[in-house]
Each structure stands twice: as C-alpha cells, then as structure tokens.
Image (cartoon, rainbow, N blue to C red; front, side):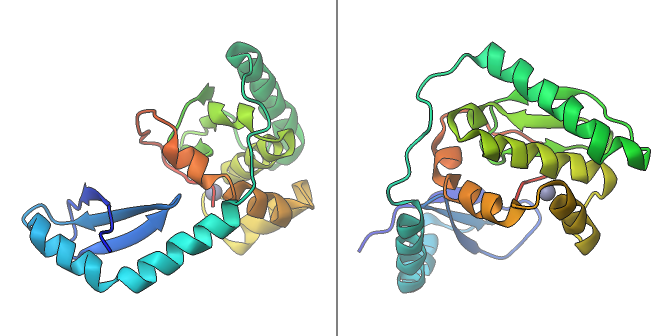
Length: 193
Ligand SMILES: [Zn+2]
C-alpha cells in the first residue's frame, strides 16, 4: 500500500520521526533526506502506521460536531467571561496574574497559556459540547499556577473539574477535527493533552 504523509522539516534533529496525529501521518525529517528515502522509511513502518490509523478511526467513529454554525463574536465573549470567572476561584487565590485572553482559531491545540499569563482559547471549541470548552478553560487556568503537566498541575485540575479524565478523553476524540481545520498553524506555547 502507498501511505500518504505530510513532511515537516526537522530543524534541530537528524532523526526521522513518524507520528500519526488526527488520523494523518506526519513525518518529521531533516531537509537533506530525499523523498525516495522517506518513502522507504515510511513503507518499513507500514504495519504500525496502519494500526495507529485504525485506532484513530475507532476512536472517532460516530462523533459529530455539536454545532455547525455559531456566532463567533458571541462565543468569544462567552469564553472570555468564562476564563475570568474561573480564574477568580482557580488561579487568583494562588496570587498569579491573568494576562490577555484571546479567542482565535488554532490548528494544533485547543488552548494555550504563555509564560506571561496570556491565555488563548481555540475558537473551534464553539463547535464542541460546552463542557469541553469548560475543561480547556480550567486546564489553561491551572497552567497559570503550574506551567507543566506535573502531578501538582493535575491535582489542581482535578480539584477544579472532578470529571476532567472523562473530558480529556472526550476532547481527544475531536483531535481529527482540530487537525483538519483549514487554518494557519499557531506558534503558541502549550498544548492541551
Ligand atoms: Zn497543558
């Protein structure tokens, strides 16, 4: 079989890495490697790639978007209000500052939190069930306190959203939608995993 894949130039690494993300095969490789060479490498991992694609298809089978259309401006102001509201109970008591909140389309993550305390929420969440927006908001606010995915981070998430494990799993089922959205890639710092 011929596996189609996306090539991402590796700037710092000399290794070739293959990943299946959102049902797509992504090959990160140094620029000097030829397409023929990459084809051979990908072909030699065919069984693993097919398994990963099947797993993704099983995971995403039957999911549909909750809303086909929504008012972007309305969603953005609702999401910002939610960030401020949850900030007051999750992060403010820890004495951390909330920076700018932006709601925009992002292709590789549902939300992000910068070192300066700026929080970005993916506009595409407007298509998903509202509890998933809430999970992303909580996740990013917890990053204001802990800038990593450490145990301390996850216990703060658990305290703020007891159903976080289910939400996290549910959100993962939409990852193909995130990857397929035809929008420019954002260069933000954190990825909701
Ligand atoms: Zn995170």
